[in-house]
Length: 407
Image 1 (cartoon, one colour):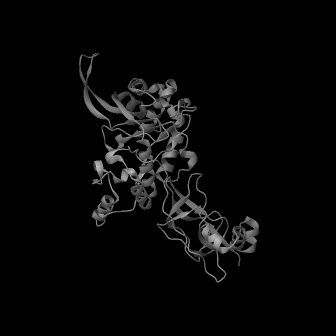
Image 2 (cartoon, one colour):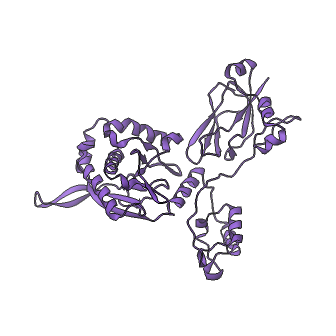
Image 3 (cartoon, one colour):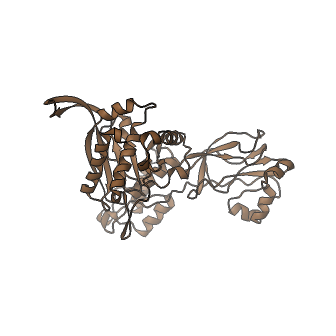
């Protein structure tokens, strides 16, 4: 009976490998075309590897918890000639012939059947998260020697990873011996492997921190907004109001969302705003499109769908690309203040805190009255805008949120 390989697919144009989370099938199971066989995790989301044809699982040659490169054969399905003719899939023999010799196939991480029977074991790879480390200076403790850099590369360490190491070299420089002593010191400590999601967040924050970031903040009175939300059916998410107000403010001050490239500031061509959604061991940021042209009511369905996909770790690259700024509602964790960090490809991130009941003086009634007050915090790339520009954006957001009927 012909055999068809189960291959790690290309899960996104910037994704080179994925980690196997769970097998949904076992050897001997009968499967149909487009059935989800394996759950995998990339540095962006959890996805499924489907079968392109129906048949019987003959072999699963990969391991849960291991990462495999795109193109790796993860298993084999026995398939009828009729199913092959119907679906047009390639067999193991056809794929091996297209790749040349068995040795060439193995080197390319395509693990096909050998002449003596059996299958090559797929080669697990280390998750590869590309990015810039925290910038280092050229003197004293900040200098990294070529020998030290080579050792860090062997261990997969970034410059930020050695910040806890005390240096004994000239001017406090960290030497290879210092690093080895530190690694030996912590070798018996409890530890856990960082997930692809955690590595992706760490990489993004390292790259973000290569820029001079600053934050401004101010309180807003939430009573009108909360009353407006309660009157809607269904009730829109509070974060959706902030998204909408942020987009309208940026449409009025588009230079605030510009991105510095060399000697130019590239302005946004659309006001697509990211939404930070907390998931296990990280944060997903789906992007809500054209927020400045749609009302809160118009955006409710898109918003709810993106939040659901993010929490299920089912976002695709299309869901996450192209945002010009992000909104994060850290108030959902009961926090009353914070300074969020923008993504490397964005200049701004706006955070909103939990609402707190406070007495506020009212000139209208000549007395203190109880109101619900929350903090807005805007973090920005100080190369692109200054505090005054950031303040104008933030004040406009606050004005819009305190008059929610305009949203």
